Image (cartoon, rainbow, N blue to C red; front, side):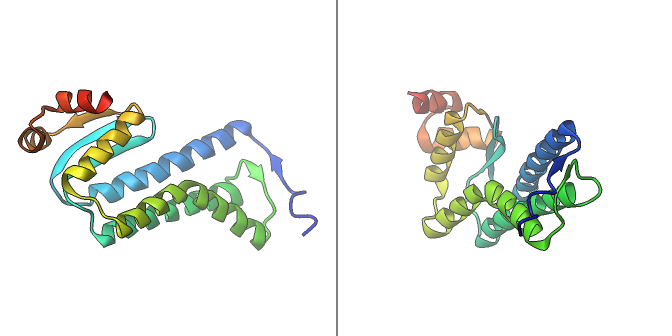
Length: 174
């Protein structure tokens, strides 16, 4: 154990930055792919600094909630393991099994803790319909995301709230 951290050396800082960007991008892409497999009425989508968010009308199934948690976590762990403990690694780390488990586990926890909280919240207190859409829109507005509504979403907002999307976004802003 005393020699665990002595084998840490950065070969390429640019490679390390590319690895971190690739790790986070593939994690977000895994979320997006799981979301795209979900079938339901599409209200809209948003593009913001935290990635792409897709708005669906109905409550997600339990299978979707667990897939949305586990698939990106597995992708995150695989990218970290391949990026840090193979010959492609821009850093030299100890190949001790304890170090490998610790580093990959910390990385997965870093990326997936929010997903775990969201999954437990969705399982314990599920939101659907208008409440889920309003909560998601409010969260997206807080991150300065650009929200785009589908024709179905436009008619849904007009029928259920009596607002056009721009009126709803203006109301939620104030």
